[in-house]
Amino acid sequence: MTSLKAAPSWNPFDPDFLVDPYPQYERLRDEDPVHRTPLGVLVVSRYEDVNQILRDPRTSVQRFETSDMTPEHMRPLRDRQMEREPSILGLDPPDHTRLRKLVQRTFTPRAIGRMRDQTTAIVDDLLDDLSGRDEIDLIADYAFVIPFAVIHAMLGLPAADMAQVRAWSHALTQTLEPLLTPEQVTAALEAGEHMDRYLTDAIAAKRQDPATDLLTDLVLAEEEGDRMSEAELLSMTSLLFIAGHETTVNLIGNGTHALLRHPDQLDLVQTDESVDDTVADELLRYDSPVQTSGRRVMHDVEVAGRVIPSGEMVLTALGSANRDPRFWGDTADDLDVTRADANRHVSFGSGVHHCLGAALARMEGEIAITRLVRRFPDLALAGDPTYNARIILRGRDVLPVRLGSAA
Image (cartoon, rainbow, N blue to C red):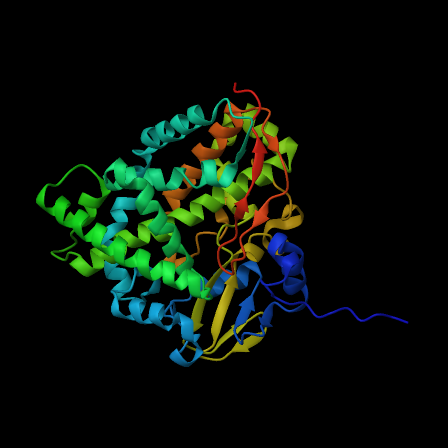
């Protein structure tokens, strides 16, 4: 008897998908590139189709769920978000364009380049602290620490506050996901109140006593006489902690794990500094920290030969696009830290919503990963990782590694 093969699906709740979504992505690209999920939304999975949706100026990033779709336990969180000034992540032009103009000069590659020495010092100090330990959890002891220390220093906030603000930020990061437990909602609401008060006071202090730091730059940012309001400043600063932290944690964790599973590539990174220009982008491409990005199409649009009617919500599968052999060729599933065009990945999105912090994330990932594997040449896995059960953000919750002797 011939067994029937199940239809391809996008199911982030499947344990196999959680560990390795890429075989399922392959089937979606080949068999159902515009896939209707049980949740009702569409998922597009091919590189060109993902790029088409992300770059289409007639799409919207406005939240797509209605109040009727919001689970009862999440409504207090939804109400809080509705009361606040929306972040730039949830704004369409012209509001998005205005805010982006005000802050984008702060995040240029040249501006971020000035942070290299400070970031390197933060990483080296942490590696010094870890030296001598036999085994660590790479996520909790390393990846989780670095991006927050960097953004905290960039903003010019007191080092003594870092542990508490990091705890609030971690609770708030959960709100990037569409589904939360009641406990996560409660923690996010409490953290949000504390974070708002803390950042409101910090903004007032920078306005009173400007300094040479990112928060002062945001307070003073001006474009053709326009400045951010207090509510917009609070929203923008909160976003730096929430969106900029967890994604970079996942870049460091996912990227290091990928290298440890590919000894030839690990050896290249350890012995050839010329790969520093491409390694972060290739690791972002190979196992993207952000797996999906949603858009509502505001006009009828044809994708992969199928017409998507106006009003449909579409999830672009960034992780799938980054492995599409139609774009990347036969080596799409290979890790190659010398890949010259790795920076064409869509892990930072594309179009007008391309990630403002892309240059910062690349810089942090490159420094954190290369200095780790060069300081500890015998770095090795010490057990199986556990994965975070997320729909949007993909990462390891725990990644046990043996450090070995320091170089």
